[in-house]
Image (cartoon, rainbow, N blue to C red; front, side, top):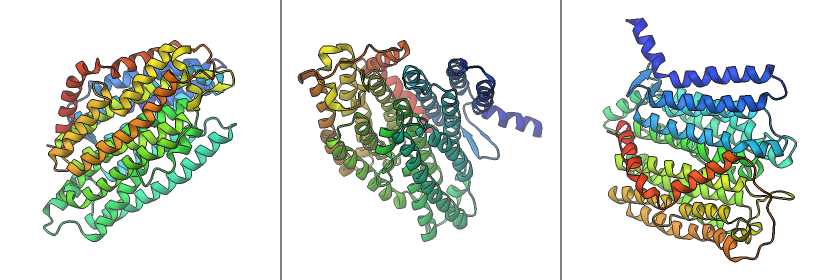
Length: 484
């Protein structure tokens, strides 16, 4: 019987085992390979991510492992799939850039594998300890990736800032975990939920302080206000493919973890944490909308844009309902396509003097590179939430969930900040289509980059209307497994 249980436990974690073993093998291949090993490691990384994605989708419907510290359900499967797709996109987009900039080293795809492994562990965390282990495995890889261009001052500065602030947030998270354990006597989500459900007095003051520190640590990982300070500098300083990865997979994984820990362990004291989430959401939406208005660097603009989008996603968490969770899942899936596509377009913009990051240098792009301008225009319109594009449907589901949860003022704030945020997205379209050309662009390299941009542009076009309902149905099934 014990042997059968062990097999069941291992079966629940097969995708993670594939990633861990595959990552170690890739590391050995890279260490003992020749000078051409980077290309092979990159191809093998892509294959590993695809195999892990298939194993994730084919996994058991619902299972637990390691005495409840590791959970497998439809919710985890949905979010892990987004993380793996985002990681695969980052690998696919990085090749030409890394080669041109002299950064083509086998460590890059290996670090992405281990970061993705940490994200998968985070998403399946069933206790505060497994949560922390997964979070730190992800973070350690991301610290190195941020400073991957170690000969460039901006990149090393980005890595150092991210490391110092990340260590601070980890300390806050651990302090919160210690307080929660001290006042509940357990670190398992189910155990905490049972204790809070049986208590007629609600959460004690010490436990509430622990929840505040826990939320603060998680808010740093999703770059929500007021723990967003690292985001613009790291996004600008890191190599552009690394910035794309930062904006996609870690954000989705941290949001998935945020939802699971709050709604699973602390759903019994929703009134106590809801106001905190609302404050973070409102702050993120307002800062993301207004701070981006004055940005001239497109990577910094995307950083503030990501902060704003986190604020919209947190509206669904504040609702605390199954509809709210479904809305967040739909939003994050659409956010994945918008962000991947936008960075694929940014990576295709290269002038004689290097990568073009200044928004004013995009002037007249519609005349010199019409298809690139069209794709980037679609992504900007979608990020702004223009009707009939994918981004509109993401915000629609979020605002509807807020209204159903009697959070009408929060939905109104989200609507207003969306209008403000549309200004800086439309400014990019205006520069591309109505300003006189000021810069010439080199012929783009890399077919994979073109494929990624084309596919994501199609997914964000009015054709997304056909796909939104299957996506919403899948997100509904995933949400039901988390909030029943």
